[in-house]
Image (cartoon, rainbow, N blue to C red; front, top):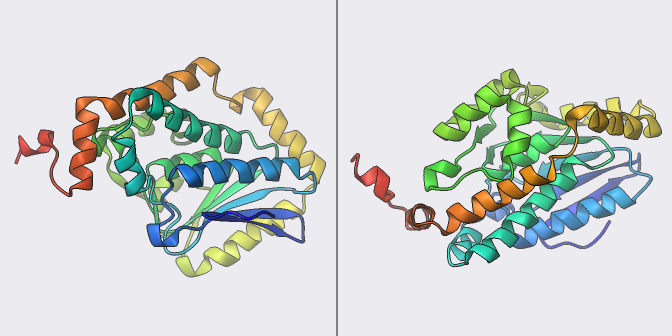
Length: 266
């Protein structure tokens, strides 16, 4: 549907689109360019009145490994204002995905770390291969899952979100299904046909009715995050990125060493 460097937006002749994250050499980790392109692609999808729904997928072995290392390294050198702009750009992507007026389905394989859990949480539905692994890993490197947090809390439930945000432990696709993040888990070799089955099911439904139902869900309380909450989450990640601990965590992660708080325990 348009030319991008980090993704493809493909329109199926049956009337839906697939947004492919396409940085497989980086495990589809996102950077500023990918965030901007995804936001632009979603704007195109929203403007196309012929689309009935959208699939969100990742090329290659992994759905999305979270933030790109080079982008994180660059972010570590930025001041608070620049980090806030980065957080606002990611927040805009998440809010646009969550608020898309057509249904969205994430199809997950491999790793879904950090912000990738946020992407899946922003979709109306998600399915995954049984080997998929999820992790809200931010606190491990001295950061916080800032702008994704409202969506993750809604998708996992507050109690589970507290656990996985605070421990940064990995959890399986089966566990993600138990928590409600995933609607179905299948063997890896069945993921393609399962995605096709979900698409076929959605195609049975009235296009206008799907949009009306999405709007109904938003009006019933599953809609936009209030502006003060959005601003709070954007500031939260920007503040901690420029804090001494955030700087140490990022440096340790990039230098492949233990952060100072772990060295004390060693």
